[in-house]
Image 1 (cartoon, rainbow, N blue to C red):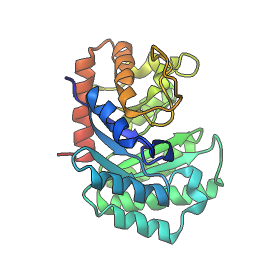
Image 2: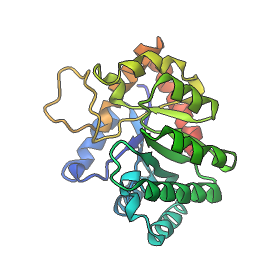
Image 3: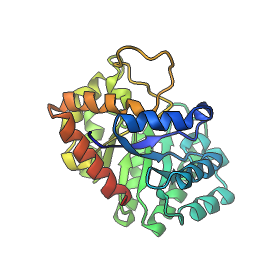
Image 4: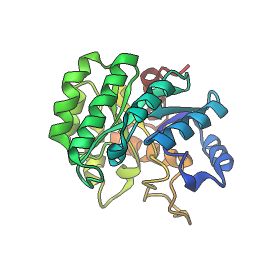
Length: 263
């Protein structure tokens, strides 16, 4: 069976509280051998690390504050991330970045939280798990000067256009592709450009419980996405790139192992 790594799943989310073990078994049954649990707030960072510690070798986690929660970023948040990244199971700083699409936190708060988390990534030599939506220019302005001191960076859940994709690749970023590519309404442009990502920069993720692939047949009864559906993201990415599923599984898993320093 092919082996897949889901580089971003919010499985500390309360929608998984009642069936987390069954959900993880369903993922294993389709070849998802490892999952990076996304941390995005003080609370979820602690929960994600705890889940990873309870499933060694299967789950790993990130620690960071999503731009939506940037208003809550405090010295305590900073100290919490710094303490969590000392754990072997915590393999990246983030999810961090900028989101001007919703502006749930003021832009100044977002910029401050983003800069502080990049400092943690620099000091710890951990890769950074990035979020960017409708904030491209500011995102580049903050990130680019930091890149020489960062070990690695991934544009998580990339949904942008060809120009920004080429810019990210030129900057040395890895690219995370989700079920957005399976959405014929919003993701057609992504389907058309995903083949420009070099083999050694591509990774795949579900962003569960969000972004359920619209191409799933039969349609699931629940709208909740989960890591088992990474197999569908793989299928559509392989189709769009004109590559076999086995090839895409192999390169994305190798990239994730290298990026996160997985054994």
